[in-house]
Image (cartoon, helix red, strand yellow):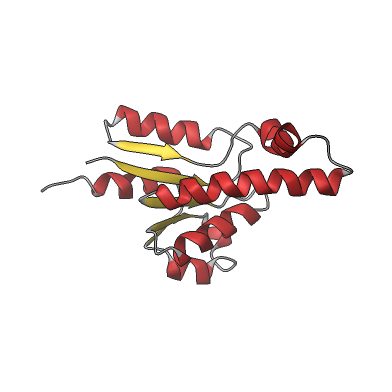
Length: 148
């Protein structure tokens, strides 16, 4: 059995690569998907497809259409959604993706530091699992494959 895990969260550091590498080292049969990690491509994809836009707002809206299409397709195809909330960035997209996972009845693993407990308490109560680190999330995923 292989599962697909959608990795929701900020795209400004290598947390996804670290998680994928650790999963591979453990031999876990997990296929990972997520948002476009190339920030420049994500910001410019609307104009790349639709052409130059009239202003920055129109450019953002065009890019959002393409990014929302990608997210919706990949999140729908996932078996589990892992939403990471960190302390360094505002996590609007993480919250949106976590909410979509709940609405789609997708199992949700919420990763958030203790410092964000209060801010994310309602979301945490809707998740199947809430942990404080990506390593703990990976341990929860690996538990799915244990037979004894």
